Amino acid sequence: MRRFVIALTPRFMMDISFPSFTDAPYSQPPVRVPMPDRTAWAKRTFDIVVSFLLLLAILSWLMPLVSLLVRLTSPGPALFMQLRMGRGGIPFRCLKFRTMTYTRNAEFRQAVRNDSRVTKLGAFLRRTSLDEMPQLINVLLGQMSLVGPRPHPLRLDAQHWHTMPGYIDRYAIRPGLTGLAQSRGCRGETAQLIQMQHRVRYDLLYIRKQSFRLDIQICIWTVLNMIGGDDKAW
Image 1 (tube, helix red, strand yellow):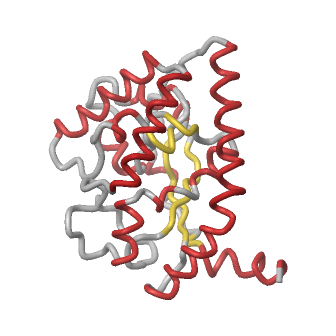
Image 2 (image 1 turned 90 degrees about the vertical axis):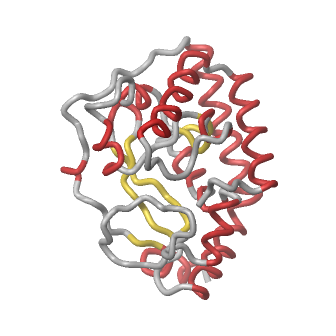
Image 3 (image 1 turned 120 degrees about the horizontal axis):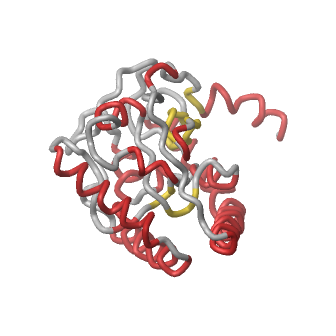
């Protein structure tokens, strides 16, 4: 049984096509923000312990279940990897449950309210943020943190990298599975410039004020949003 799952995983569960690395705006990489050794050690330890426990307790059964439901309700892979910007401007492969109809090598377009591409199951996964749960693997690998600025698709980064003050500074630390901006309601489509500006201000505020206590508070806000459902999670 174990051999069967491993053999089927790449085609059964994942879309492993990636956008070109030339889509990444690398000419001005962000400067990494140094953290006190004690703070950095505590944050990384918290990331490893919590992500490992959640992987064992939740994702070990949630991933096969959701993957099966996604496959049964919509043709295409259950998971997909998307290139996102990581700390220091280094891209990484970000995992998510697929929530939209599948089109191989589709052009990037932000999800909007009542987006016809979002499946019925996908709408539930997005509203409860369960579609992001596979990113616990990214956290365990050290590509992400439990809390930090959310990583954006490279095409979205390219729109603001050189034009919005402070935008590249979001990537001075590891991106997060959740963040201060998202926990306080700044999520969803950024059709208007001010929406992205508000998100960036929250991200920069978190970078300046980050602490273990703040991370715990953001995690609590995030769990409450997941339980209640987020209207902006389209």
